[in-house]
Image (tube, rainbow, N blue to C red; front, side):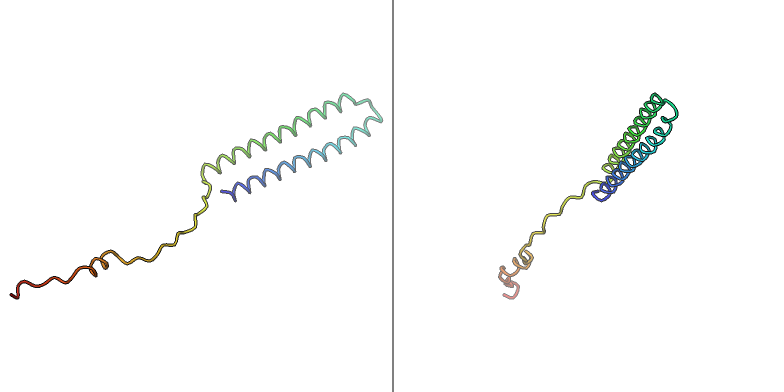
Amino acid sequence: MAKIKSYQEQIQDIVAKAIDAVESQHKAIAEASFGYAEKLYKLETAKAKHDEVATLAYDKAREANKVVADFAGEIITKYEKPVAKKAPAKKTAAKKPAAKKAAAKKPAAKSTAAA
């Protein structure tokens, strides 16, 4: 299970980093665009609304990533149980089978029919 769980965590991290990168690029592009537009028009309220909606959108993307990751984790634990470490095998001394020991100790039976 550790291997699949590791993959799931790696994917979750990749998605989180992708969201952060897209958000960062989006903010940089929006800042440049609003910067040029503000030279011509007064756009403070439009920029504030844009930033509010963008923040909401990226927060929701992060929430969705967490929900998917939690769901995937539940599925992984449901179908794949953790692997228990095996205890080292105990060495046992070689023993003779009990039947051979018992036969070796019994004296041979005397025949009574020959008398």
